[in-house]
Image (tube, rainbow, N blue to C red; front, side, top):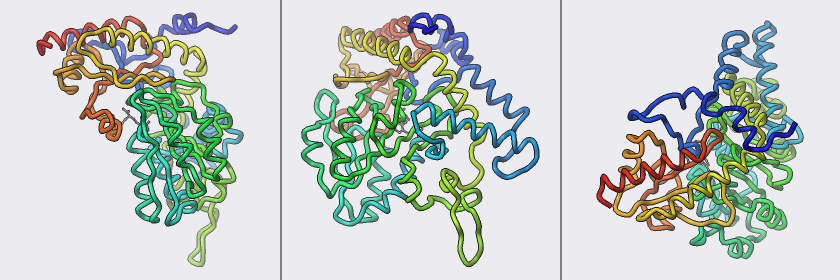
Length: 413
Ligand code: C6P
């Protein structure tokens, strides 16, 4: 039976299955609207991690004993789950990493060093998280390449005319976020990747904010690399995945040296292991992989389509409610968006907004959201940000607006 969005969400009684939501903050039931930072983990993810720890935990790929075999099986099953989740053709293309940041650094320091030389260009957009700017800046300063910015427009979209115009055979890498963590903008990756490919550039997608909210198919996106974190998709922190096209991964040198990433070591020379182990030096986050797979099972049981539809409704309702509120400004109005809305209240610093909202039991993120170029573009130092997840509903928006009114009256705005 296919469930429509409402039935699926009602049936799962979201709030009841996420233990952290069963608490009060400041004497109010918690409303959690900081999902873009980290989502809260459902009981089934916590249970899967505990069950693994209790009965199967050991090191992976290293032992013949039963626990090591169970752990290896669970770890590799998790890799299969991740591959299926994003439409990868083979689990060999999935490299387990600590998160999006590590994945992007891995690509910059391996493929980046191979592909980029003095006089070449690396393009990133003005809406990137620092994790998708700084590794490329480091690469450019090391190689003498130029970092080129794809500019934002006032609406919070990318200026695609400038982008298409700027692409040339000097462009070696285009690195863009699928969904902005500040504006919620959903970038047209398919179109951008097609143009990048036409000049021979590789396309690196920061999927930190898309994997939890949209059904992602890396083949359909047409990118070469896709990075995401488990802690934003109802799984544990310190865990994530990098997908890369097999031929690119094969051609890339290893990133870190150590156990697991080698086939043989001697003082006369070392041979690298096959994919994906070549990029997984040392003991990995084994329970993290199990938790990530359990989180994907959780999301897939609900269905990515109903999730996207429901979150789009919530986002639209939240934007309308914020826009209707006096003294509240919403940052950007992108054509396509997901999950995230940033706002300002005239006369109240975002940190004060965050504190009053917290006292009202409403968790939002405040600050520059590790995307200072966006703040600079809009001429603001910080914003408040509400971001939605599977357990939010319309009553959470009412609570957000009530808390904003409390903040306004507290600061006499
Ligand atoms: N954004 C936020 O509150 P890590 O920390 O490696 O899991 O993810 C980094 C990252 C990369 N790209 C985007 C688009 C992101 O949103 C994030 C993390 C959090 O917005 C923490 S700053």
